[in-house]
Length: 241
Image (tube, rainbow, N blue to C red; front, side, top):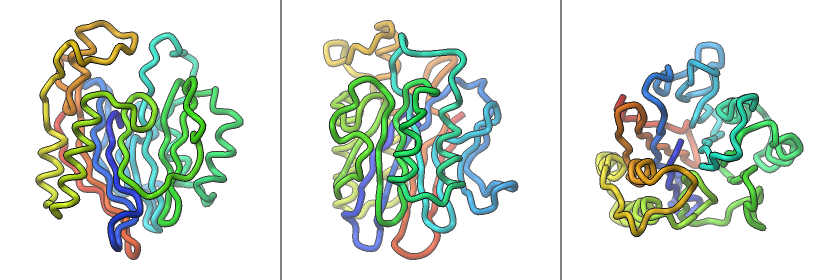
């Protein structure tokens, strides 16, 4: 994922509701969310190049999602696939906090990432990027959060806007279509409001939209995840490319 907004432990009967976009190069092969034939308990999209995923759930109520951290100078060609982290948690029986504590020991094997892992009772956000903050890797308190390609709740304009609209839709009890309309917003931010993240100005402009479009890279799929207090979680999707 490259943008995800989510409500944790604030909706009756729904511990987690999350909406997000996966942004990727168009030529990277992938499958939309499905029950994995080789892992029948996992429902997730699948990266066909490295075998991992960007977001997924399990029948018994586990959830995971990953975003890349935009840090061009910290990228390594020999790093492990970040998508494997999602698959590893969904396969695991470890509690979210225990999984993160074990991961933190060898997190430098991966290029900078944000990982969100949880179940019906606990949700943890962990980043291996520089200066992630004092609450990194600790269980999240109930609330509405946003995560993109920087720290949790970093006030990039597109994340601020998406989080505010997501909150409004929650209050309205909006239908799925309204969340997907939010995720399809291609409005770019004015130059004076752009963050400076180490990429060119033109790429900052492209990446400033909630729904990204360019000749080679953009939003591939939008997802809406529901993790209920009882029953199987669900992922609804809209595939763009």
